[in-house]
Length: 67
Image 1 (cartoon, rainbow, N blue to C red):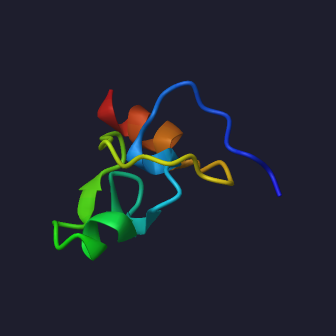
Image 2: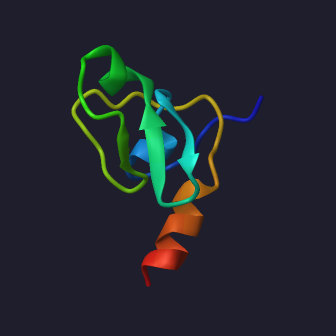
């Protein structure tokens, strides 16, 4: 298993995210459990961020699309 290596915190490299509208938006299981809108921007981050166990390419793709 490859560990996530990121200097910045984004929803896309959080352990609570799942694919939704790749690469722009992700589905957050943590927010769903808190009755909040679970669909958030890949490049956003909340206070509940936890490091993902695997690297996700959605951050790189979202940054490319943002430019």
